[in-house]
Length: 358
Image (cartoon, rainbow, N blue to C red; front, top):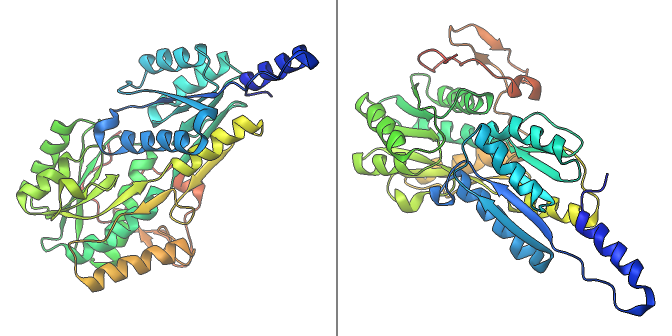
């Protein structure tokens, strides 16, 4: 299947001109991005936009990029994605889980366009999927939190009850309890990816309930700013947010999309793009840990060692023993949850308080 209409047009033009003149210049690859939040969220959408800029830096005049920010998941996403596809974009990245159905719908209408959907699981001949193994980073956060908490109460701000978010909560809690069996996790589901006011309110509520460390799976630095003001500790999300909380941030999970975006854009230019499913973590560098700060040197060293053991494949965040919420054995010692179980995760592990929303 041909995913580069510009290349085909240039080739036809060159043949038509023959010896009469120079071949037509190749049209630049037009690449579109759809963001669920603003590029100024300093988190998820910001990091995807940094990946877009990396394409421009790496490929220069071979590409032209476009982005649309603050796109609601649902019918509005269909409209925006269709508009990009119908205005000559050869490659379109849709960068939120809730864009999955919209991406598939539009892709069916534009089979000559290559689509890339972040964090989804449905693919087609012209739709690839990609995501990061963010849970690997959350294991490191859990290790640090278990050592740093004094109240043994951790507050966790969660966006939507989808497997990606649940997986992160569980990976964090498993490692937290391994280093500190008395620690517990209290989750507030905010049902938004980006709402600084709502995120800040959730952080305040969790601190009022006794949390002395805040974890988040939302996109703004609002929770870290509250932690900084209230004198508790926290972790950044998607981006290094230390500038917003210089004495509160312990580290952050940083999403580095640039290399993947460059590789996939180059593949379209070369005519080698094909549908695929990519799920990369710390080892390939799609997930990166920010500086370990505001903690004892020996703990920073231990966090670095844990990171390296995950990179080397010596540690798996979901290696047993793992216990269900009721204390029963979920994964026996020596066993490991496979990717299928991780991708469909819909339960809490021991140490997470409350019930998972329907």
